[in-house]
Length: 323
Ligand code: PAP
Image 1 (cartoon, rainbow, N blue to C red):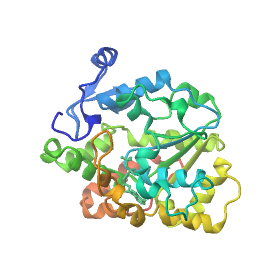
Image 2 (cartoon, helix red, strand yellow):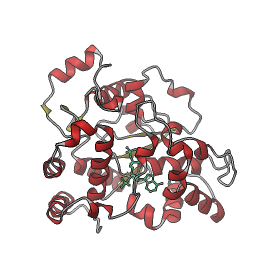
Image 3 (tube, rainbow, N blue to C red):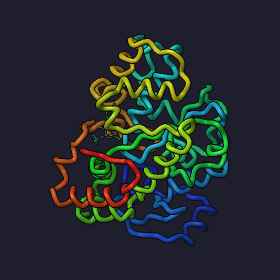
């Protein structure tokens, strides 16, 4: 995939250890990447699989850590901005004109665990200020042991699968225009529903964290992109309470909502120009930022296919999306 614009889709920097493991794993041709590999029940690109393996091996969680978990395109950038501004609100008052989010893309402020372990294996996580804030797409099953055994907190954000799929579909086209050009959307929806999709199965990822949040509400907080859209302030307060952030003034909540809104972040130069170290343009993380935006891309029958799968997979879980 040398023509793609993201290092996460290339395989030039794989270690011999990863190559040996990969040769023993089930593999499939995939949309966006020519080959995906199944490890611990999930489909991975080679690069992010290496990042995951290194993360499992080396990452040592601390009790004070905060880990943001998402499926790709489920609100990662927004959640990073919200939680960064929340936990740093005394150090960086949201109303100040020199807030880091005004000049830096959220992905550059908060490290993406498996991405950093792939791209910069020598990155020193112990140097991050406390509470350390990090994000990942890793499934519950594959999280490093210390994340599960420590008292660190996990904030999980889920998005309705049709919007998530469509967001990834457009992102993939920007990332690897040549590789995705002739791939029919019908085939991609089918693969997504079957779970044979990068990071998939989407359904298992969501359900594992959903049940973990019910079983251990002090450890895992489950929020949705849709509730963040509808009740941003209340959801910030819920996150703040979960993280033990103490009392927050209404004015501060309002300031965070405004600073991190799609309109505000997407208009900043830091999010319109430039690239991340993995080669992805910062503006690629801001497209429409809507609930129900899938209608522009999915036919009725494709939407129904995703809806049917969602009903079947989430049946009895208590988890529902009505958009
Ligand atoms: P990632 O997992 O690759 O980091 P992520 O941030 O989860 O990506 O997804 C980007 C989506 O969030 C885009 O959705 P769309 O394609 O449907 O438009 C993007 O527009 C949306 N997004 C980014 N920032 C915000 C924000 N501040 N508020 C609402 N939505 C946002």
